[in-house]
Amino acid sequence: MTQMSRRHVLALGVGGTLGVSLGAQPWQGAHASEGGGEAHGISAFGDLKYPADFHHFDYVNVDAPKGGAFSLIPSTRSYNQSYQTFNSFNAFILKGEGAQGMDLTFATLMAHAGDEPDAMYGFAARSVQISADKLAYRYTIRPEARFYDGSKLTAHDVAYSINTLKAKGHPLIQIQMRDVKGAEALDDATLVVRFAEKRARDVPLYVAGLPIFSKAFYANRTFDETTTDTPLGCGPYKVGKFEINRFVEFERVKDWWGADLPVCRGSNNFDVIRYEFYRDRDVAFEGFTSKNYLYREEFTSRIWATRYDFPAIKDGRVKREQVPDQTPSGGQGWFINTRRDRFKDPRVREAINCAFDFEWTNKTIMYGAYARTVSPFQNSDLVAQGLPSPEELKLLEPFRGQVPDEVFGEPFMPPVSDGSGQDRALLRKAQQLLQEAKLTAKDGKRFLPNGEAFTIEFLIDEASFQPHHGSFLKNLNTLGIEASLRLVDAVQYRARVEAFDFDVAMQRLTMSATPGDGLRTYFTSQAAETKGSYNLAGAASPAMDALVEKAMAAETRSDLTFACRALDRVFRAGRYWIPQWYNTSHRLAYWDQFGHPANLPRYAISDYASGVGERTLWWYDPAKAAKLEQAK
Image (cartoon, rainbow, N blue to C red):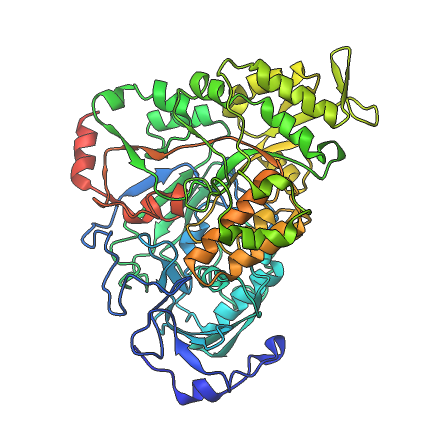
């Protein structure tokens, strides 16, 4: 590895923004560095699989051919993105609907390994040094890094990107960068990022994965505005053809500077990656059967069970695979907006829980394809089970009397019904809870303590979810609650959800295998007050705030596990949501003209799991494509 010059070690403060001199800081190699000094990678707890001289990730096909096209519909979203539409190429701010795939157009300081839970290795940065107190990270930028116009990517561009995203980025970015004091370029090749004391464990990882923008490109442009101008990128793909609200293509940069880096070998194989946008999931499925796009991850059990019988399936032109999901599934559910007075009593929220019959819905609507979600940490060892361990109790005891007593016992579990669709025992329990909360019933109607009728509006933006609400709403109406469903378009839905203008809205909480600063966006009082955050329920308590800090400050995986389990107990005791369901595998369908690695990496099987997956790991197979063409 290249060593830092003595001038880099002794010179310079981090400037007025940071107000800290780095001259006296002892520096060390990053986690798992060999021989001290600079290091090639970082991870949350110091564990790295790959040595400094690794050639490529184990799971890629380094001989994968380049060429062909890959097309799909969005299966994941972040920041201001939508599943159904786009109107801007700025995907990192609150305004507008950002185009899917914009991450392909930017390099980052480091890149994730798909077979490790949180390890990152050098991308635009070739190495990193960490101060002894772990509050300053100094990166050396690769001299070969370039933007599309040939201009050099420097530490000044990275510092601009980090500081701009912290100041003007999407509110979720700002929350996750709360512990970032700032960044400064010491020269073209040297970047220092400074963090606050007691910073979250994963904040450096988050920063290392942020997009790098051209400082010169934005010299005469406003960063935090929507735009259909394509940005000056530095990643493996650039924006190609597009039609607002319909599709966007990304073209592989043929002479890209990073193609032969260890983190990139065997990936970024397609010449074109195209996203298609549909307003309706059923129409989107028909588009797949007509070969309007080539790859689909199926999230609707009804469609998977009943509609994959079209001719191209029967004659083998379309392949199906089910790949076990070994990653945390997070938590999907209906989130109850506790900012509204009628939902502040947890007994009311539990009564609403009792009205949802998962067993009937799974059997009747979803073909028995799903398991019940009980925790936002579902499908991981962070889920609280049984009585609290001594380690959990140590974290919870300071809040005894401030949190429900059940936090110190068995964690709350969603009710299990008799599968009839209208479990009388559960409805009786719901009635009792509503009575205890002083919601009286008269002439078949339920009234709030202030005399107003109790109403609930469920907000959705996809028609495919309408059947899942039928029995639920019927049971709520049986309880005298005037429950209704409102279907709105994607733009209106996002606007209302980000402004917390709803009674109940659906959301999926996605969790990494090593959660850290992202916990703030879901569980803290700050996020509850921040428009655009993922804390839809408005869940806010000193206990959760403190436990999030404990989780972020964990020094070992064991400490992290216990902190998350304690947090899980408090959140579930709050009855902030009605947990829905999760799939234990990825259901993949694709037109048979691709190849993919034999051993898909655990943390990057699909875009849904990692944001990497098939777009970068799969490849176009000319022989299969020719055979497919002949089979028409």
